[in-house]
Length: 607
DNA sequence: TTAGGGTTAG
Image (cartoon, rainbow, N blue to C red):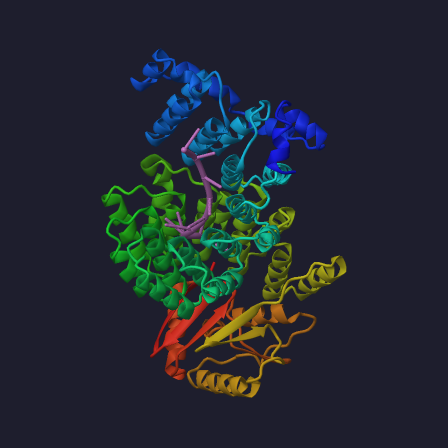
């Protein structure tokens, strides 16, 4: 239905129109807890000098003038005055409504914008493309998919399904609601696209763990030469490189950032700090970070997290102190980083001290992630009982439960605490998240304790109930090529011989250095490849330190052990292996990367 | 007179 046609329906309210189209928006009621606040605003605000003049001069009837006054209030960030004036208007038009909605969105109150939109439906004022793009943004911020879908339906009914800005907003909204395919569908059907619509789609991929598609689209945009990428798009591209650990692409994108003069942009600089850290170059992160004139909490947090993942706990703590000294308020994510740093560097007391002062000293209430960090800290050093008591004392949601108890489960396995591992795995399974991983870890814990029967039974149970764990995979990037390996499967590798030869050489040299008992002394019966690897890694710690180099009965597998988590251990492994391998390469698995160059190595987590 | 896209997270 086109807007012209709708004008003929303007004698009826929206509701009759929706009834006509069998569309109901009554669900908006449930999102309007703040409707009463609108009345409160009316009662609590006092007029500014300009406001009474408008009333005195009888200009309230002049919608154009009053709308401009609303706009002025919004520029002054006085949404309360804007609301009061809006309420006093005898007549409002679509601009009045859209302006106020945009005001609420820009001032961090998207729910109020939704309430206004709901109120607007009871009037005879029809929404336009400005109203829709604003209200879609509100849905996007709140990630309210169901409301977003209903608004999308209205967009089509009112004939704005081809509007460039509305469609870009829809792409963004679906992206923020993790509906990548729906976002792409809208993007593909757009008749006209601009840099914003492309950025919305690239960001959708980037924020939904599909960095390779983000970069593919970024390349496509540059190929068609529609326009130059701007700072928004470049930022998303840098984030995509970071998520993939693509150092080469990241450096190229950084070059584009500099060439196009966006290197002074703080948001891009923050993304670059994060990208270099995730790509194994924390020294580059530091260089970019130090060029930011007034770094906010975000780049500080990126640096803290980056340093933490390198086992540079003291650097993380120094950065934390620096930001406190500069009166930059840490947020919840900063504390995740700082606690992570303490955990990975064995700074237990410091971690506990910061954790206990979070709320009192910095006004940040610890949540499930912070508790999980502390459980991890205690668990790593073998204080399993304390970690268990802490985990039991926390009430969190099911998603967070999997993380919290999964962390304790890993620690229990590492320290051979079958009793705690059983309860922790049950808690993970109850949460319905990471179920297969919990089964495998528990099975391995049984195997490590010598209870092969229970390990076997658990595996059989997994097969019987159809619980399947995705095989682990690793990939090695050498120059421009990426070589992917799945656990226990080398058949697809075109360089199998070369890799086998290198592995045998490494194995031999390790044996020379006293790292014996590699693989040959172990017998595996009824244990799947994945489990074999983990068991081998635990039984031959030195081997695990050297990237889980395995020689299984079915062939050679390169794999980084999941239990290889202490970065200082990694550094030891790097020292060992860099003596042997004299070329640059990066070894990765889905979570971590290890970068060798000229005898030195760096490592970190991807996610 | 009104609208859309970017950074940190075990």
